[in-house]
Image 1: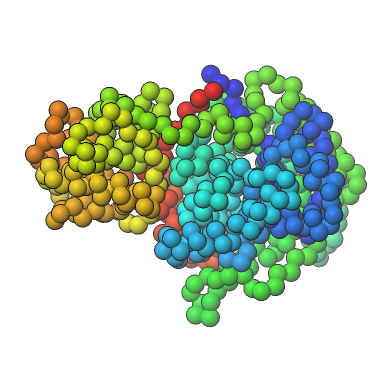
Image 2: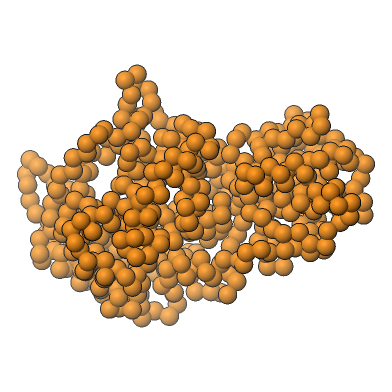
Length: 491
């Protein structure tokens, strides 16, 4: 069994406190001296702040580590992904996501000297359209999930999903968060006990390993090595403003004002760094784990571009899919249900166009549908011309838009992608396409939709206003069960 990956993740986002810059410097140097690489999820606003403060020392200390992306602005200024991703049609929401996030990705890449490989959303504030926009912008890994987490490292929407919250092995922040500043009775937090913090961390981490997960996330915020309470905590209710009608959330107010938090004492900061360094050396000395970066894991699970399947392999895809709409693996190639549908449709479309069966077809990775999926009220009868035309329509739609259609009109027959997949799969099990084939109505989603990450998909945030629901994001996330496929380690 492969050693579980361990990711040292640091959400690097505080542009207010210069002390937080020094904490990033200390952490980056401490990890490097321990022979470990951290993954610093940097906000574009933070990167610009480091440049404006001329903190070349911080950026140089980060150079040995991995730089990933945490949004252009903390809280997705000027408009949260949870808002436009739930309000707008798919293509408009993707365009908005690109408009908001591309400048931040470019700034982080330019300032830190690395193009970010991974992304992590803020406080579950995301949309399916934003995730696709980030993938279009060059992000390859998503350290998150659709509400409830993935069963392990997997591919969804062309992104390597590395679940975060349910794979925690404890926090590198230790007991940070227990202190609460009281303006009515000001006080300073007492110094941490490094030995006690280390023991608590070790117990939590070992307990996480016993679960047998593919990976463990250790997450911290560098600002917590310098600041005793969360900066701007009292403004968490502001990101979603209420319109004049009192119904719909909107963008941020024009000016945000953040006030400084409670700075740790020198002794407290030194104690916190002391136990963190000890924890890093303890992890580095273990031989039952592998501390890794997201880029390393991506390279190990990435399949080569331009994969082809032989006619015999396509027959195997048809055999598996004839029993149900599902993801599968063929000779080490992992296919989502959407991938399988495109493979079968491409095979039949070639047959219709060339009047012969192809020797091989190429794999493509479409998204799942992003509009409500049509499901037949009863059984559907596909005639032979319906199979030929349906395959051609499916291939042309995916080639143009990169995603599955939610519904198809084939002659006078209306169907969803699930019915077409079953019809093509069962038809290809015969020596020649049958004159007709009948398919019972389906739920419209593949079997992977039953995984908790899809069946319980939800887009919610501590930042959202009372009563806010994001139904469109939730069902779009469920429909991306079409693009789910397990990761297969290839190295």
